Amino acid sequence: MNKIDFNGSLLEGDSNFLSQGNRGLRYGDALFETMRCSNGMIFFWEEHYLRLMASMRMLRMEIPMNFTLEVLEDSILKLLAANALDKGAARIRFTVFRKDGGLYLPKTNEISYTIESESLTSPFYVLNEEAYEVELYKDFYVNPDMLSTLKTNNKILNVTGSIYAKENGYDNCLLLNTAKQVVEALNGNLFIVNGHNVKTPALSDGCLNGIIRQKLIGIIEKTQDVEMEVAAISPFELQKADELFITNSIVGIQPITKYRKKEFKHEIAKSLLGKLNASARLTSTKF
Image 1: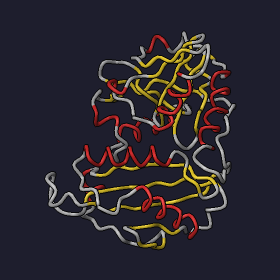
Image 2: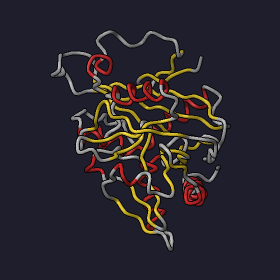
Image 3: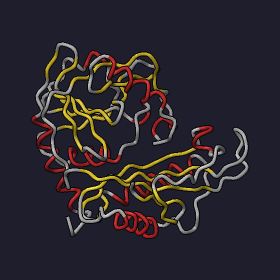
Image 4: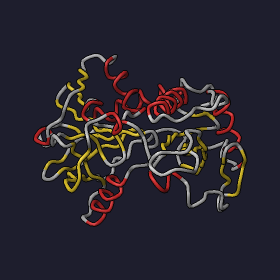
């Protein structure tokens, strides 16, 4: 069992360190970051850190004085070393939750945190070219507001959608907002390709403010002969697209090969993956 970091102390992973009063458990009063690491270096660490700080401010959590970029990075690296993951590829989950107490109104805005780690197989992003089929999930909808853009622990929509996908033999589902626009996948942002145009939903549609989404938008905007568009996506656009792909911080880019009767290629996704790996290398001299 891997060790975990709880408020700066390394504990055994099966330790009983959370109480029944934990606000993340009771109210989903928590948020998290998932990050990929390679050889003891965190991909896009500054972007993850800035998103964490911005999200905590939005949720009116009190940010500790020692929550600096350098201190938190050091905590993550110490955990990786303690779990013998500093020489390979690893996934990190950094969870922040308000301290126990109160009902909907918390007794304090002070926070606690945990850091968890687990091994990954590849030190860099690799394109999965196997069959990957998706469908729309229409039982529940995403609210197009700023809270939906945060990586909070309120993920019951994603949980029920994942169960629906498994029960019906899909690899993933695409989520709709209350305006019936396609927002994202269950576990990442969505991009669609039509000719030389690449499109992804706007944050105002309610999609997650994903780190890889941010990176790819910047990469595509600098790529010749490819136009980047940030705008609402109608479900009718999906079957007309040449490519569909999902992005997140762990897999990088996941091509969608089938939606309903339409099958898709992944040429643009493949070309972007190389550029994404190159961007990740810039975050580390040890990569």
